[in-house]
Length: 86
Image (cartoon, rainbow, N blue to C red; front, side, top):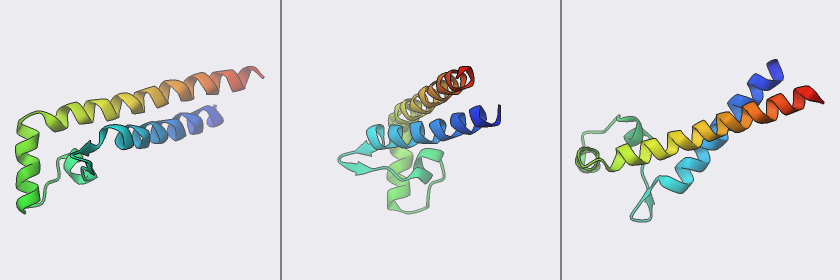
């Protein structure tokens, strides 16, 4: 059980990292993780991030990254259950 839980957590983290690498770019620049979490700085870039957030750019990005994390969880569950059978 402990091994399956560790696999699920590892695959979740890997899925989130892959999702960020694939979907976390706007104009060939990665969006900061703080911006994706909604923690904006009160600077010009923070203002632009808030504006982008109002247009739904970050919503799609967050959803795609979270779906990759969900895929990682499912992969971890499958591999964890297959490793129990052996």
